[in-house]
Length: 76
Image 1 (cartoon, rainbow, N blue to C red):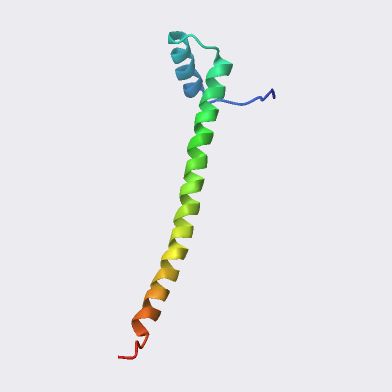
Image 2: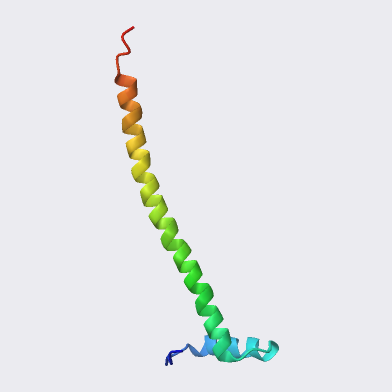
């Protein structure tokens, strides 16, 4: 396990302490769980951006293929 020193805004620290007084977990565990959750959110957002970019690329290619089919002479 790594040791990390961080500065927390007073308001966030106060709110966290209030919450911790009502639940029965250590501050360290609470922060670890919060970071794990935030990491999941960030990974999903990164994946969403990557999928959107790839979808846009496929969409452009699909439109080009469709235009080629429309311009084909089927020998009628």
